[in-house]
Amino acid sequence: MDGIWMSRPLLGVLLGTVFGLLDGLSGYLYPILAPIMLRVILFSTVKGVISGLVIGIVSQRVNSLPLGIAVGLGVGTVLSYLVTLTDNQGLFWDIMLPGMLLGIIVGFATVKFGRPPEPAGQPE
Image (cartoon, rainbow, N blue to C red; front, side, top):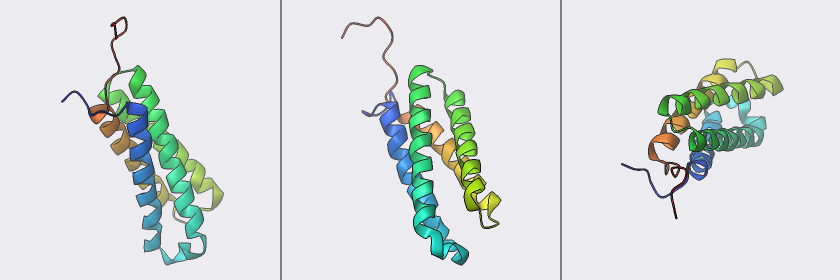
């Protein structure tokens, strides 16, 4: 499969948004988060959008599945850690692990299913 019709940055943002929103909505599993659910959903969605954009841009420039996954893991880890610094309610790993998994999934899917970059020097 040569990739779908969407560019990698656009696919990364779309996937990051969807998975980030789902990650945020999973906060409803923790009653302690009820007073701050809007913030949890917002932070998770923004984290997903940023992760997807970074992954998409990197994978557009460097056509490598392992690198896309590694960048996804790295960005997901860093952004999740930043969220834990705000007020993690004692849920450090409950924030970190889904964020890291989000990065891995978005990194894989963006490289695997996004439209690969055009070879340099090709006429249009």
